Image 1 (spheres, rainbow, N blue to C red):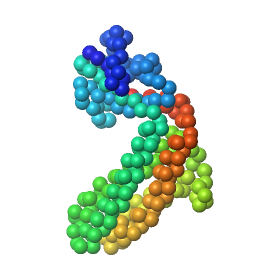
Image 2: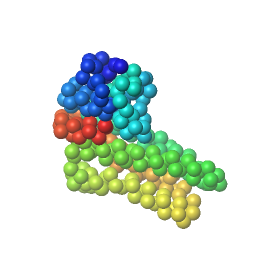
Image 3: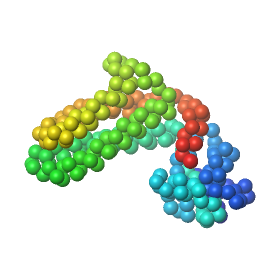
Image 4: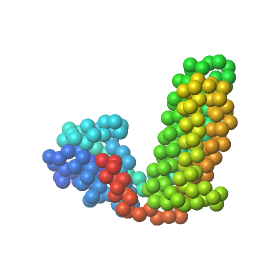
Length: 220
């Protein structure tokens, strides 16, 4: 049985007779550099999905031949997350316009099916932005130059989700198409601004180790 931290072999004598969770905790406490957090696990070459994490953590470390523990620094993690969020946001806007066209052409069942994926992606972008702001410990009452608070800027696009839900409940497909074609892109402009500001904040701010500790605990 071998344990690797970011592809570096760790002596395994300290891991005898313990669970994978205890192994991860030991690695975090004794081998992780300051300012890093554990972002993933791989057992015998297979990445452990989030849904299987609890079951995997309960296993004895002796049940796997190789355990890989993957870490990242906060700047790398947040910047990467914002890059993915920006890409997903643009894709969601494009998908919304395509779905609007399907509604106008009468292909309503398929449009509604694809809308579910679009809304889920939209929610994931919201969660990624909110989590990054929390890690950076930015005050929700902070006001941008436009006068809106951080919380207000984050909430604006979510109002569009409420409008989408209302249009679906009322079977108002004309209204739904208008939201997806025109309002979605305008509403997400605030999120694009937040993403860019988070990137700038990461470049200028030294994220504290205390928040890193909290994240490592959450990962396990």
